[in-house]
Length: 359
Image 1 (tube, rainbow, N blue to C red):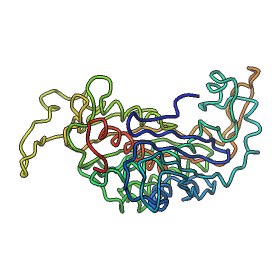
Image 2 (image 1 turned 30 degrees about the vertical axis):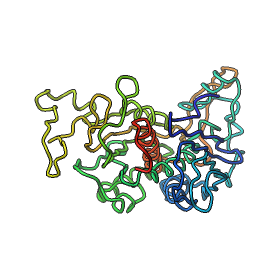
Image 3 (image 1 turned 120 degrees about the vertical axis):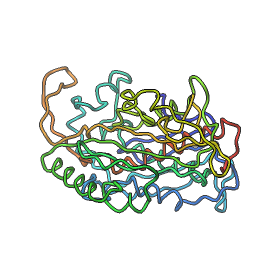
Image 4 (image 1 turned 180 degrees about the vertical axis):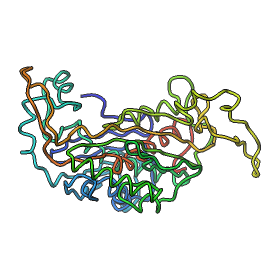
């Protein structure tokens, strides 16, 4: 199975299935003499772990990580760092029925088509549980770039959107509610909407916004390895992600060039700035020193508690009702995954630009 390694210079390989013994990753490219402990990584894993609120899956996993290699006496060695996160709360019996059919909007059919075999327990390798390993790897990447601030939050759930604003919300405002929306009145509406969908056996999707400040100009490569292209690939690799836009995105198609162009000026410290940021912090595939600003769209959770029509492995019509423990909305927990993938992209871009980590 290909596709489990990410990055060119700051490389990450993840392994494990949803209901296997464990998940984990190997990180190669982390510099030596960086202070790193399991507690440093755990704080990020806690934002993604299941069972943290009444609008997430009830599956209880501590998602405690163990560092197996690459660290000695609290310092990185510059060698590959191996991490493991054990699965402690599997209920594989919930999935005995789906081994005989293909669930709508899941990867059951495509995994069978490609590999001729799949692990039906919780979706196996295609499960979003795999992202725990990404968050652990992203935590290491972030510690390599302490000067860069990467912050994501839930901007909309279904048709409920928070007001637009400039700048960066505080971590405290984002973490002040279960849905991770920094606008408290909107967050309350989102939570109630998600609870209503769950009570009806349904699910909802939405949009996560991410802004990155203090990223230096010059990150990213022209043509095929553009910074926004790497970010798009990273985000679209996240389970349930169906869309990516940077800067003005699709809304920019309704503007004139005279309004959309970001005019340059010299800032108070002599740095080159732009009056607006419709480019989203990237020009020609290279960061321009402005805030990197993008949105990520997530579809409704595929597993729902309503009966749906589908096909059996023998291509016979049948029905299926979702079982197991699932999120009615993936967005609150996906915030940590978006931040992690952005961290991996930036760490890789820093090394590709010939700069040194930590930054």
